[in-house]
Image 1 (tube, rainbow, N blue to C red):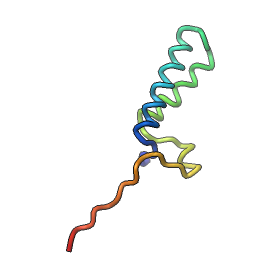
Image 2 (image 1 turned 30 degrees about the vertical axis):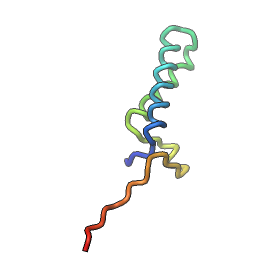
Image 3 (image 1 turned 45 degrees about the vertical axis):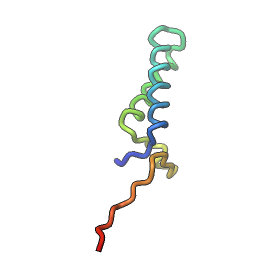
Image 4 (image 1 turned 90 degrees about the horizontal axis):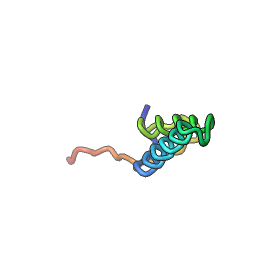
Length: 69
């Protein structure tokens, strides 16, 4: 698996995941708040399966360095 999420995307996912889980734990938005586990995990590992299927990539393009001749 290659990373397909950029830094900002990952930060937003982690924050959203933590907020949703906190709402579930406090009982304010249970059980739907447990969906926050998904963005939290994808934000931490940097890979989103849905992005892979749709061909979306928010991380910067890495170019290969060519040896100078």
